[in-house]
Amino acid sequence: MRNIVLFGPPGAGKGTQSQKLIDKYGFIHLSTGDLLRAEIAAQTPLGMEAKKLMDKGELVPDQVVIGMIGHKVEANPQAPGFIFDGFPRTVAQAQALDQLLQANGTAIAGMVALEVVEDELVKRLLLRGATSGRSDDQDEGTIRRRFNEYQAKTLPVAEYYKGQAKYQAINGIGEVEEIFGSLCQVIEKL
Ligand code: ADP
Image (cartoon, rainbow, N blue to C red; front, side):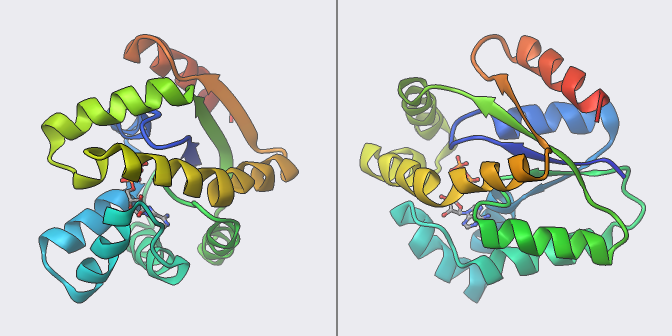
């Protein structure tokens, strides 16, 4: 199994690149944002609680997302690998993921970060908000709060993987195909 954490701030292009990786390599995509939005669409109690936090631009509790990811990993023992997108977002989530994968006889091969400057991110998110219907993309205040959460809680996750010598970064600005090319080069060496 080749398990990859795709890392980067909101709007970095993780979802777009994940889709291309799935098409090319057959990986299973695990996006906690998508899983949470599915809970909201199904109007589950978990979804309703998560929505309040997501609309404020705050993270949902670690236990919630760790539980969701655990179910998906255990349900896919034959996967060629997983792409983790938007997870882990805290060091506690990263530690839980290591334990979970170890219990399933596998591990993270590497983290790849998409580097994009903040002005470009805000532009992309507001553009996405205009068409996607995602309420958290429509308000600049919410977007800024997501960046603050990212700085405070998620950036330390990069340090966690650097400590395991599993961190690499690529330029996330340019043509989608060009970025995908750089990403594939890194992934194929893992
Ligand atoms: P983006 O990366 O564009 O912010 P996501 O779809 O990954 O979009 O996440 C949307 C929201 O869902 C986040 O702002 C947060 O509230 C919640 N969320 C997603 N993944 C996690 C996670 N791993 N831990 C905590 N909250 C999460």
